[in-house]
Length: 466
Image 1: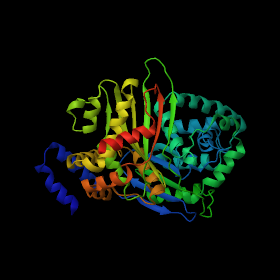
Image 2: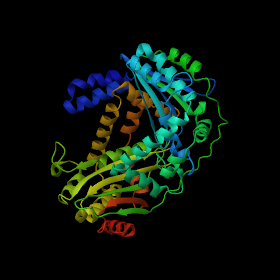
Image 3: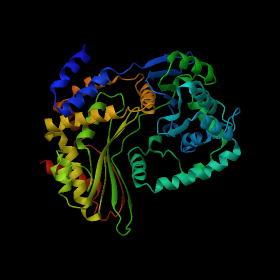
Image 4: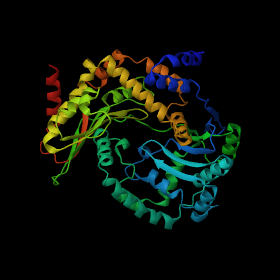
């Protein structure tokens, strides 16, 4: 009924509204996500799409957050070791089998999840599941490969250290959550990478790779019943846990962590983080809208000149002069907390005023956000949501992640209805309760001689409100 109503409205709309409604119509016609829980507690989920290729993967509720200081880096190290051979396939055989299928095998580790996935032709679905099951349950963790991968990970760490934005966000987590494993880096410290043993890896798998914390997710031309049969047969070695895992909500700290350097011509990089909300919190979607309202800016980029943009913050930043290089809002959710804020770059002379402007703009959302800004933020968020599901890999990722964090996959139609219900008063309430005059974590790197202390930044923001 609702899709028929939308379809009847389409011809009467202008181009932008037409595109938006077509996206909404597609959302209401989204194929269902089928979910089956196996006797072990493992969940198997899939969405059918009319493609020639399929993505199948394993999403595990485990990451660097569930490590200790002594074994920090283990989850990521395991990701490297997974492709080095099993009892059935050595490294070369594994690589050749994937190549012969015309497939692709990949993995990544985050603070709360570890993911292994394969992309292959629909006729090779069982082979893809078999390979994933093999590397996750029967990896040899060969000592020679382990020693070799230490060097690989250390070189990876060197590359990460050259990516200032990644360094800033790692240090922002350390600043905000420094008493919690959530503040650890994913790669771990050098001393751990050099000392992690086979026993560390096996112990981490034993404690964290439990059936009830695993989702097998697939998207593409998938027969769900076949996927369930293959998963039940091939993932039979994952044991069930006792359901107990000690998880304490990490405390958020208003603090600053600065790294000063005076390289000629270098920019100051900074991030400001507020305590956000978990995935399942009622305000999480409103935070996504606020992130869209704040938006992003990069000097000399974009189709619309900054001073003609409908984004007030972009306009005010452009007025600061050429020293303001860029900013972007971020919103990161975890199981029980979150980080919301902005990242930016500027020259040393502009840094002071730039931080003032950004902090005030975020604080001022509690009072001066407009209907136009809220609607623009919602439209942009819808565009992002629709555009993020443009491949079988993206759909499988969406399924796996949502089942781990929500316990179900939220249909796009439901998400749209919840998004449409957010109005200006809701945005002001969340900004007032969670962003106005709240503690912030600040980290910065570069020429910071003109950067005022955190207490002074907060005092100025409060004074501008008077």
